[in-house]
Length: 441
Image 1 (cartoon, rainbow, N blue to C red):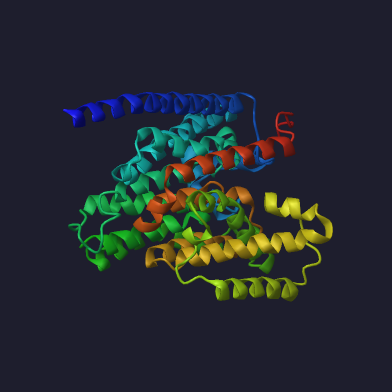
Image 2: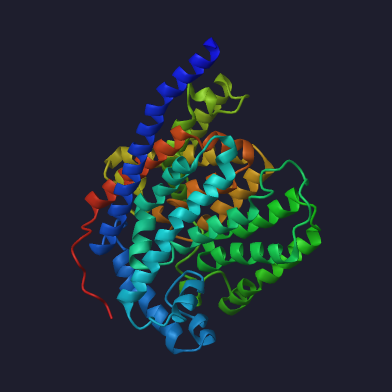
């Protein structure tokens, strides 16, 4: 009897807390959704270039695909991206009206939020993450400057997130199993996974990791023949093989001289990873840095790591930085004078170190990290909006189960949301967002 009374009292105490949590987070989500729609209505451009890119590049390309044959349009056009979005947009009955196209793109981008919430819930519900927290975690994209700008201006960066979420949902039945425990995947399901994941890559070359990790998980987690899996994914990759043959590279010919690997680009990618991974790392710390460092890490490792940082700075001659682009870290560093380049190199070093530690946890993580960062190293220049919010979404959706369980918790989701809001506020303060630029026809 006393035990039942204690349980009843605990439930009564927990009810107000649960209700308060529901009310607070529902209010936050409502505010986020309203801000997302207001951004569209006011023509927000929180990365400072999406409006210009839409009128100067993206819309003319859509018109080109609408008025000429795809084979002619794809041969050489003024974009470094893969052409899938432009092909789809050219099929729209409203492809002659840029405002209507932007409205359609915005609606599809907004649906990414519930789709991503569903993907998060499917993967993490068994670990105590309910629909409310899944929706809250996914809502970070709605305050992401990169996602908002792409959604508002119909550029290429919103669509891959739809395909990432779709790929995760298709893999969710067997993704977190140990070994090859799941039965062979059916032909139709295998084709669907291959096509959906490959389409993310056909929008942006930076999303090559999606079909790579999808094929790997099907082979490692199901009893499907590796030969069959690789054959189906190879067939799905044939359009890219054709593009590489047509373009003589990953980009159209006019970009061959502009896009090249450079040490500066590697360091910029490291700085962006170091910056964007900050809320994820802080959210995992409960007592000390030992919560996120490998078990073998100690005083000797700390000394070696610090010595490596000093060697990096001396080797690169940390006296000046060549450009202001790349993201918040680089822009802040350029304004710091003599301390700027050491600041940038430190952030880059820590980011590359974090990526290395992440890769060492499992083969799944190693493949994910390698396939994620390699395209950024091969394309110059790389900007922050190419990795934000794709870094967090790639980790949440495709990291191995042990890492994912550590990363996807309420503290990390809260910190990541607050951190993204801060980035948005900096973007709004840095760029003159709401002064309309003349439309470039």
